[in-house]
Length: 224
Ligand SMILES: [Cu+2]
Image 1: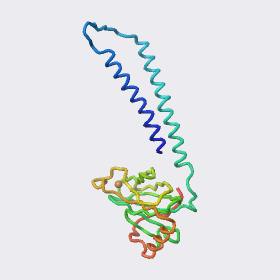
Image 2 (image 1 turned 30 degrees about the vertical axis):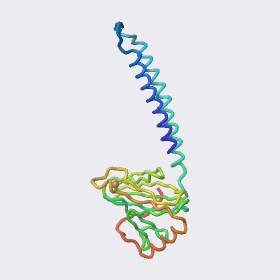
Image 3 (image 1 turned 60 degrees about the vertical axis):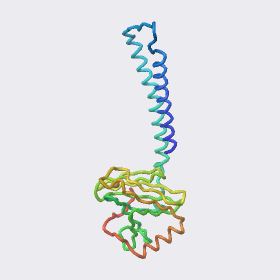
Image 4 (image 1 turned 30 degrees about the horizontal axis):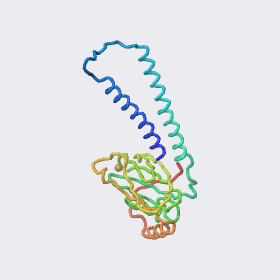
């Protein structure tokens, strides 16, 4: 994703600098000065058309096609090989205005049973283990965004969407809502806590003993 940002920024940056340079050159080179009489001309429309078409093709090949190829590579790398559902941690997230409802299957590995673990705005995951998140929404469209991990997915009412990621560093990171979802959108903030495998296991076991704090939502997990 970062490579894609750099490629897009580099290509459009070069195009921007070229345009500004040519514009500046023409402004200075053809500025008015005493004793110089302007020349009025209708120009050569064939030359104008062929230059325009030529540049359009050049820009299309240099920028659009180039970006499309890099997009394709980045997409394949990011989403091309989903993790093995048997090994991944599965999490259901149901946002609402304006919070993230988060659900773990608990020790039995099944959702909507008595030992589910639910949290609000606090997502816990183990480091170096693939995580599959399934999303829906209680009310309006939200978008689940982990900026540090460069993943983002819409959460749509009546639909279950999914994404996957694998955190490689322990620590606390932001969860942001990336879809303007109402007055409180700005404070729809959560935290991604990446723990060591042992810490995560201890946390899940502890929470599981307390049972789900909010059992009113969720769905039967199936691979999507
Ligand atoms: Cu939102």
